[in-house]
Image 1 (tube, one colour):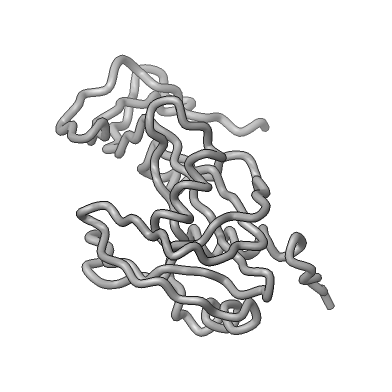
Image 2 (cartoon, rainbow, N blue to C red; image 1 turned 45 degrees about the vertical axis):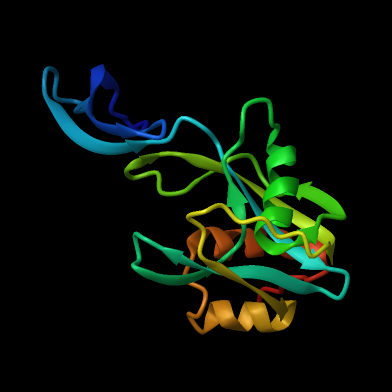
Length: 190
């Protein structure tokens, strides 16, 4: 039997909207139960940000320690941000790496089609990029509400940090996995 999937019913109800983002309620049909619906609360994000894994010529990962309000603590993650009008995903990737880390991108690789942050309740994917051959420029330009520190970690140590649970940002973990073949790291299965 093929998978039955719920369908949206009606228009969403907007509970709160700020900075273009919205908290909404959406009704969905229950498959196999005509006339019955279920309500879901969703976070709607109308733009697709670019998230970038910067790596230097020496295979050092350039990451950031950034205070994150949802976790209420500092999280180790990759730089990224939302597009401004007229910016392509690649433009955003270049700008965010330099603005947040003070590094210039040498080569940019799109790792996959847009990936969802959390598809259970967020209508929000992101563009995952690998930025290779990054070099320092010293031109870091943080937004007023960004509280972060740049760190540079050899790739092997970065992977060990993920395995040890020091890196808890799911975007950064997933993107590291996707980037490994582009960084000359072969996964072996036994």
